[in-house]
Each structure stands twice: as C-alpha cells, then as structure tokens.
Image 1 (cartoon, chains in turn brown, yellow):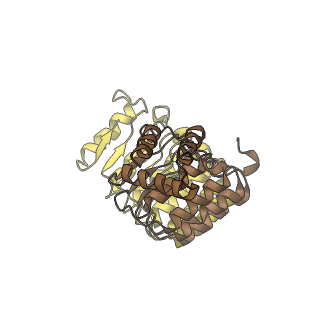
Image 2 (tube, rainbow over the protein chains, first blue to last red):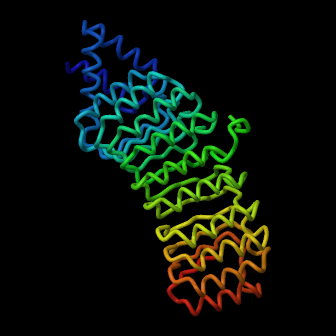
Image 3 (cartoon, chains in turn brown, green):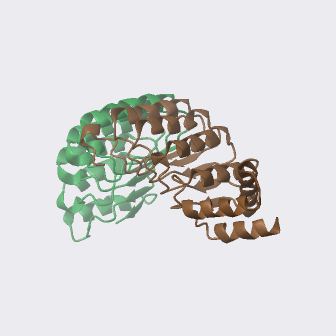
Length: 193
Length: 171
C-alpha cells in the first residue's frame, strides 16, 4: 500500500492529470493485481487525503473533460468532505464530453457543501443536449451560491439559453451569477463560434 | 431576442439572486433584449447589483429609455455598472438615463467608466440635475473618460458635487 501511495503521489502532486498519466497510473495499479473498482476507490481515497482540509481547490486547465476518470475520482473524493467550499473547474472542456457532463451534473445535484464554483470557459453551450443535462444541476443543487458561467458559448442554439433559464427558475440558492462573454444578446444564427 | 424573454421569466420567479454579471453580451444589439430583461428585473425582488460592462447599450436611445422606467420603479437595485457602453453618443441617452437616476431611491453606486463623456458637454448638465435631486447615490465612478476641470461643463458639475459632500466622485 505504501508503494501504491508513492506511485499515486508522484502523479498527482503537481496535478498533471493527463489521460496518459492516469492510464499509466492505472496500469501500474493493475500490476498489483487490484481490480479496477478497487483502484478507483484507492485513488479517490488518496485524493480525499490530499484535499480534505482545503477550503478552495483550483483545478483550472487540467483537461478534466476528456479525463472523466479523474473527474469521477475527484467527485468521489469530495463526498463527505465538508471543508471544500470553493471549486475552480474553469478551462477543462467539460462541455465537450457527455460522460464528464453527467458526472458534473450528478455530483452537484447531490452536493450541498460547495458554495462557489467556477465553470468558466468549458464549452458548456457547444452541445445543446450536454447543456441541457448540465443545466439540470441547477434544479437540484441546494448548495451553490456563487456560479461563474462566463465564456461558455451559451447562445449557440435557440434552445440553449431556454434550457438554462428554465433551470434557474427552479434554483433557490444562487446569489451571484456571471454570464459574461456569452453573446446572449445576439440571434443564435449570428453568433461567432 | 428570445433569450432575454426566457431570462425575464427566471428573474420574475427568482428570489435569491443578488448580483448578475452580463458583461459583453451584445445586449444593445436589439431593443427587445432590454425590454424583456428590464421587465423581468422590475418584478425581481432580490437583485442589488448588475454589471452591463461593454454591451453597446448607448447605440440606441430606446435602450436607455427602458432604464429610465426601471430606475423610477425599482427600489432594490443598489449598484449598476454601465462602463464602456457608448452612453454619451447622443443627448437622449443622457436625458433618459439621468431622468431615471434622478428618481431612483435605491441606487448608491453608479459606474460610468469609458463612455466618452468628454465629447458630450450636455452629459454633465443632465448628470448635475440628477445628482441634485437624487438622495441615494454615494459613489459616482467617471474614470477613463479623460475628464478635466478645464472643461466648463465638467467644472460646473463638480461645483454641484461640492454641495453634496456625501457623494464620492472618481474621475
């Protein structure tokens, strides 16, 4: 277990969480004859150890969208963590990947501890169906008070903003909302992608 | 534009939102944007601060006319950022905006950076009239407008400000 911990920290200390590094990490874990489910639990456990007393966690530009395993592990590690209040997920291309969007939506639908989240520059509006799923988190989340949705191309299609606005109708906690740089005032047909 | 019609409905129902940042969203491109947005905001009971930075609101005075009505009817808004909105491009903008501000009972911070006020000498007439009547403004931010006390209209405005020591003007 000590060796596993060493391997794990060698990858996550700098949070260089690329798909290659995670695949490499997992293959090393597999060489210890551990099942994949068990490895996921170990990873989540170590993430939890690493971050459990942080009130703020900056995960900007970590390519978490395409590395949805890491996203899953991170969210697993946050369960039961009452310290973390401020999470920065900006610039992670989350909106480009359906699986990642689902993890985000499922996590925030249940989490009540995190009160501030930065979703800035994640291409959340580029895919109508993905944005619809993401928007649902605002219907169910009861913890977020400060949300940043800047620079997410929320006006690519006419349905995009409607889905988001519908979700906000049901939200009862957000106090500060940023919709900066989304070209909301334009007809979707004239929006520059 | 439909987006603001959708947002209007959310704003009418929402009771928790206090601060809304709408920076750089091309809102001034259509009168309908502001018609729907301010309709929602008039009925909203929680929003105290809105940022309209860089939306070219001043491109059409009809846009600003909606703000006149909004300021007269809303008693919750405390801080409004109209920076970089080409507001001084015509006298109607100035008249409508400051007629609204004159009667606002809640606005305490008005940010008007980067609106080229040095090119509109009437701006300070309307601004002065509003400041004399308004009882709520405490901060008026006029920075990045290249203002100088050598300008007759601005120096007259600053004379008016001297009679309102509770107001902090930055320029």
